[in-house]
Length: 79
Image (cartoon, rainbow, N blue to C red; front, side, top):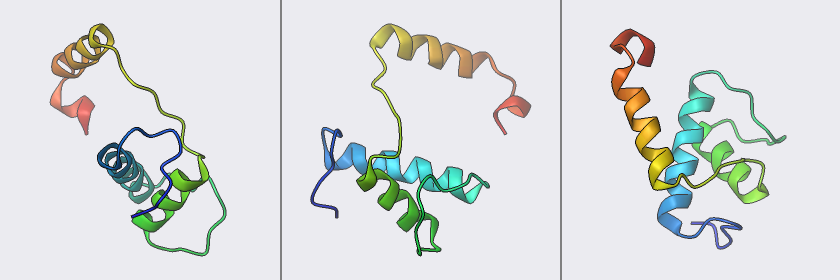
């Protein structure tokens, strides 16, 4: 586990963000930093440590809107 999580408030959130980024990398996204690592999880962790990922907290009202949008999307749109 990385000792510094920069602007992330907990190790749990750090891991969730890195896992989501690893899935993006696995789906074909380009790495945001230069690294010798080949594994998606390792690249995602290095990006998190470098502060290369942009993310934000969602407020309750915004979270509800995002959930409504996801619920109204057809299953084909989610894939």
